[in-house]
Amino acid sequence: MAYSLIPVILAGGKGERFWPLSRQHRPKQFLCLDGSGQTLLQATANRLLDLAGGWSGVWVITASHLAAAVQAQLPELPMAQMLVEPEGRDTAPAVAWATLEVTHHGGEDAVVGFFPADHWIGEPSQFQETLRDAASLAATQPVIVTLGIQPGYPATGYGYIEQGELLETQLPGRPAYRVQRFTEKPNRETAAGFLASGRFSWNSGIFIFRAGVALAELQAHAPEILEPLQRSGVAAYPQVPKTSIDYALMEKTQQACVVPVSFSWDDLGDWNALERLLPAHEGNIEQAQHWGLNTQGSILYNTDPDELIVTLGVENLVIVRDGNVTLIADKQQTQDIKQVLQQLRSHPQYRHLL
Image 1 (tube, rainbow, N blue to C red):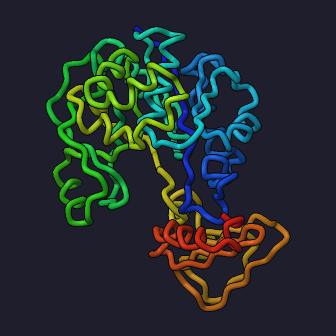
Image 2 (image 1 turned 30 degrees about the horizontal axis):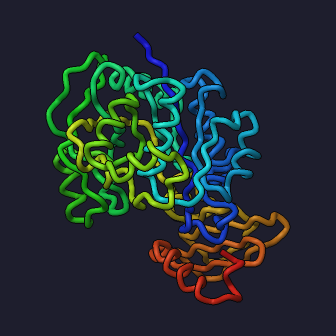
């Protein structure tokens, strides 16, 4: 039996490691990074439409300063299904509030899925088939399902999920396991051990559950988040703790299970992700007019098609030009972009560039 799914898109992130292209008014989910012509938010919504039965079944939760941009990018989304946070409190309050709101419409047996707006996913038909199976599992068992991505290399920037005991399910050819533990961003040696064991997946940040199951687990493990939202709704936001759903719930609940999947996935953590998405041209990734001499292994991006970037004798650089900012960085240091932004915030003459 097929079960319907109510998808909720988490669209309040900052995506600071894609600065200067990603800025406060235009974070990563509003960017097109793969040359498809769709922003990441639009691609996420379009992947979920069939599962939701059209726009009437899709929900989005976002920050107040991004609401107008969400509406512009998703004009068919019903306004009543766009939840606007007065301030960012990380993913735990967002998941708790959105689950409560969906419950008011679909009841506690509604199967709800949460999806980051800024990830890239290949093989959309395989993705949709996986979600149908995950929805069936969540509808028939008191579990919180997370999708585990088959790791391709010992990544140190992802969280990992260890598989525990095999669950008895009715999913044809698709195993599901109790979650043994979550590990956040291990060092390279530990990550290599995880891969060698064959028991670990990357944490996709995608969750599927029955609303009532999640609310009961939030009551047990994070009442300081759930109860104020139950009493006062979004007005309670300034009082609830700022924390992630992984820390508040997933690392504590005994109901978490993982379904390993093999479709292509990337969380697009920083500029180096473009090397995984786009074909190289003469040894470089070019989303810009570029004239290079003795230039190798570099990533070049320019939002102005009339401008030319010229490079001579450089390698392994990220060069990004967007309006009034040019970024030039060693590819091995793109994780430090957030540190640069923190420094720029302390200088009034640069704050408008963030």
